[in-house]
Amino acid sequence: MSGSSFPRYQIVRQRPSRRGLWLTLAGLAWAATLAGAWFWASQTAAPRLGRVQQELAQIQARFRQQQAELQRLSQRETTLGISDRISRTANQELQASLAERDEEIAGLRADVAFYERLVGATAPRRGLSVHLAEFNRAPGGAWQYRITLTQTLNRGAISEGQMRFAVEGVRGGQLATIGWDELHQQAGLAGQAYSFRYFQQLDGSVMLPGGFTPQRVKVRLSGGGNPVEQAFDWNLATSAGGK
Image (cartoon, rainbow, N blue to C red; front, side, top):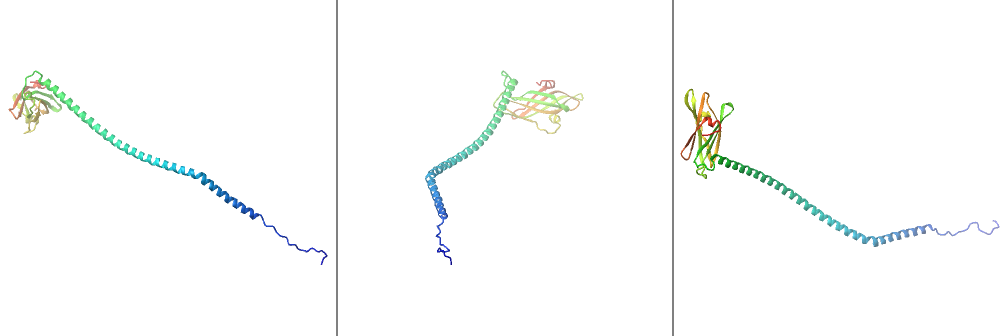
């Protein structure tokens, strides 16, 4: 045993570690920071959030109004488009109708002018009569004819009936008459119908037989009254038409 009076081992009291304390304080500080941030946000951002929500609601309301207005304008545009098409169609039909009426009026005016030239303002009034007989040679040996009928005695009456004519001349050195059936090369042919108030022109074509020399045309009108028969010189009928 040595002579030293101190013991070989000593008991030393260990101080508590400060690391845990600092961690605890840091955690408390972080929690306090979060609490402060939440409090500041709730006090600062909450009023703005209300205004934002109100503005958003107003924007949505305006958007719905604009959508409704857009739909209304779209429907109106569709309706106007349909109305415009209907109007254009009606206008085209009206223009076509007016054009037809103009043509009818022009035709009536031409008829009146022609009628006045035919009968004349000072000419005596006459009943149903043949005013002109015109013949023109056509290809193939045919003859185109135009017979003009008039009546001025009763301008309100309608003259109706049938017209036939025959061509008188010479064939084989003898007098001959080519009747309506032979002129048309058809037996039992009905006469050409007429119906008019003031005048009418009857057109057609006939064939004269070979070796026949025409001299005059005899036109016969048969209707409700007494038949009318008039003769026209062939040379005048094939030049300017006349009696």
